[in-house]
Image 1 (cartoon, rainbow, N blue to C red):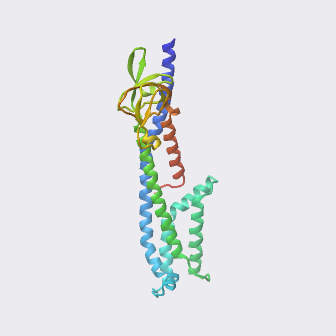
Image 2 (cartoon, helix red, strand yellow):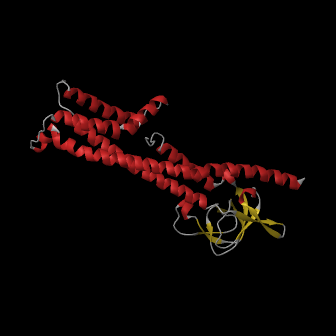
Image 3 (tube, helix red, strand yellow):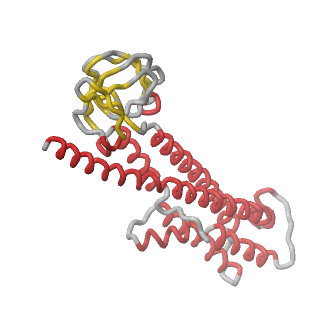
Amino acid sequence: MKNQKHHQHSKEDHSKMDHEHGEISSGSSGQDHHKMMIADFRKRFWVTLVLTVPILIFSPMIQTLFNYHIRLPGNEYILFILSSIVYFYGGLPFLKGFWSEVKSKSLGMMTLIAMAISVAYFYSSATVFGLKGADFFWELATLIAIMLIGHWIEMKSVLGASKALQLLVSMKPAEAHRKNNNSIEDIPLENLLKNDIILIKPGEKVPADGTIQEGSSYLNESMLTGESKPIKKGVNDKVIGGSVNGNSSLTVKVEHTGKDSYLSKVIKMVEEAQKNQVKNAKPIR
């Protein structure tokens, strides 16, 4: 009966771990998605920057500001054409983001950017075709260029967070040494249960959160807590799954496994941060 109960718990924990690995396996596709977004913003930024240069040079307001005079035949139409390319090509991610925010009824940064560039573009276009006033094509182009490089940098930071997530996942050991009376058996990590007694050998990763029952050692928790130096821990001290044991063996009573572990919670926090950062940023095809 006891073995049957133990087997049932093992199956439940195994299903939980399968679910977790399902989430983690999406990390590769997530990284590809981030790389696509980085490439998309990078391409749009450089095209916009190249077009912004002549827009600045031929802008009447810039010429007045820097006291020079260069006018081509149909100068205002040249500015209109160049700015139209910048608006519809460089500004497309923000326009798409604005539409997504409207559909989700959650207006945010994309709405503000889209409104700013749209007002500048349509007002300036109206001045080309008869409305009295000065155009703002150069402000439109520079704003889009700045926003594109800003999102390009942000996507690179998101990719860095994704790599950090994969590093955290790799910190989980594949198996644990469970004590069973006077013997030790190596079991897959997904079969590890709460209150199991495990042995952690020198230099090994801690498989689960728990409390030290026997022994003392220095544990490296730098990737989990940011603590730069190994911390000495002994009987009744807590250990974190994913940390690295020092030069002494430890006997630990398991307290948290699977989704309840500290490492899994950190991974979930990183995933949520990624989702929030890329909520409206999507590659345009």
